[in-house]
Image (tube, rainbow over all chains, first blue to last red; front, side, top):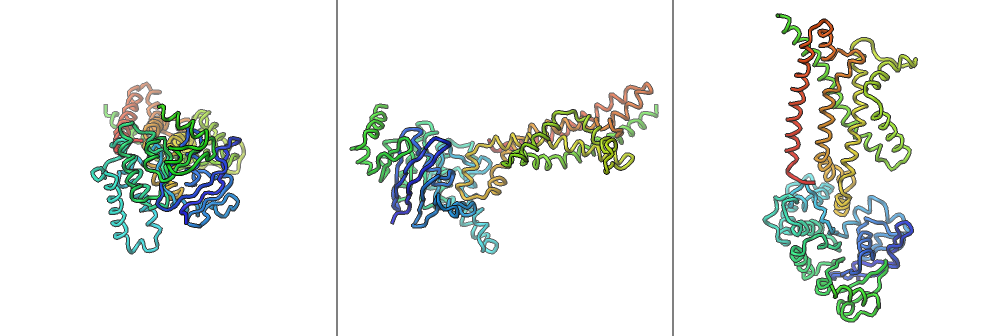
Length: 261
Length: 220
């Protein structure tokens, strides 16, 4: 049973069709890489999954539950959307850490706010808070930032900020973790540390969707690859198939252009 | 010679009116400004248009004129409402005019501050399952405050000196008081009023600097 099924997603901005007939599924523990040139709709697709954009057509199914159906307004109510979002985590291209909070607090904030809503919160307050702190510290040590807990975002490098953002997304234990070009805003010498963290996650069988321009990385880490162009999925398959033996002309063109650089 | 202490005490007394007007205006115009901000950012077009037109009128006409209109308007237009007689009526009218005027200026500063926060901050909150309210109060607000401290500080300092305009509807504030002496040929009290303003603004400047430093621990 797939964790995620995306069926016939379509999205227009005005008259511009950015996504068309997008369908794919994702098994638990799989890492899916989405590649394609800028403007091909990759980011919009991730944003649709995270409810930051609303598709005009199509369905999103997580663990056999329809969490979004463009034809059914009941699945789009604001109060429910908030909970459903938590199936997905999103790591942004520009990190988007909260500047006024420390590294640790960036990771714990959302957990604390959610814990506030638990019925047993008032009685168990102390235990819950300690658990949250512990979890955040464990995650931050996983991404190699145990020594930066009390730093503010502006005091650490872009690569470190992105690692905090990954820990922040992991803290909520999403079913599917999405990365939107996680290294595009980084200096080349800082991309390695972030890719290493993602690689570790893949080895632990974290279910992930990675939108990326790092072809070598996609080839190495992904279990499956989707190539998108002009809002449609042109080709999908294993990295060996897509990179090694692309069937579609557009995929070939895209890959040769990349290999030249 | 023993006139000097008397004059100083009368000047100080009248400066109290400036101080009160300043404090009351600040207390009410800051929250009212935030309400106007939300109106001017409303997605409901007629409301937004109405609020922005109002802000345009208030920012586009002199505060002195607004004081006169607010104080004399009800009587001249035979409205059912009228200000209470005597000093208290004049003082309340001055407060109303100042609060409306400053709320409009503050609202534009707030709007600029809110709109300057990158969309990514809202989105980061959303994908972490926060409510709109949580995002505003836990993520956005402090960043906005940090950004608007300098422009709000500017307005606050302007307000200190603007309080003197209240004399146009016969509030006996410090410059009006000093004017009574200069009319009699005694000029130093008028110069002395400047010292009151300088000291007040000096203290405010220190406070604002302190606030800026308090918020210096993070960058936006």
